[in-house]
Image 1 (spheres, rainbow, N blue to C red):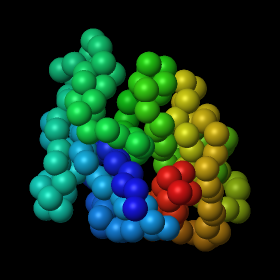
Image 2 (cartoon, helix red, strand yellow):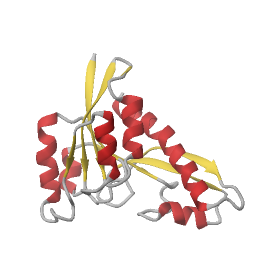
Image 3 (spheres, rainbow, N blue to C red):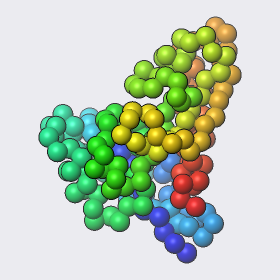
Length: 188
């Protein structure tokens, strides 16, 4: 059996991080064991840090506010002892340098049907659009924001008159379904 080591980078709530950990950590898929080695938060007060404590996942904080210079080099230093096979972004609100992207296979989840609605306001822009569907994309991280090669996408039908909070919840539930599958697609 082989083991694939994962690192998760996040900046906020950590719900995707926790979902991935619970669905994949220490589980075996096609003779491949998934091992979450470390999570790194870019914010000192991110709720995801508490989630890491609750599930027993080692977590370090590398504040992007306090480490503006050479942030990616410091990330690389933190990750270097863990023999990471895949870096997973889960609400990590920072653009990574080419140096980082070249060092690790890195994937991201985005709450829209890419290439539509790139950036931090994707859910609201998707909600406000006249499209009849919305969705989620998982992609490899590249030097251009939300533009890497797609790994997987899925959609939901929009509901006339639906409140934004309900729409956000349905998008997040779709993320919880698609992200673990996409990770397995990349690793296996």
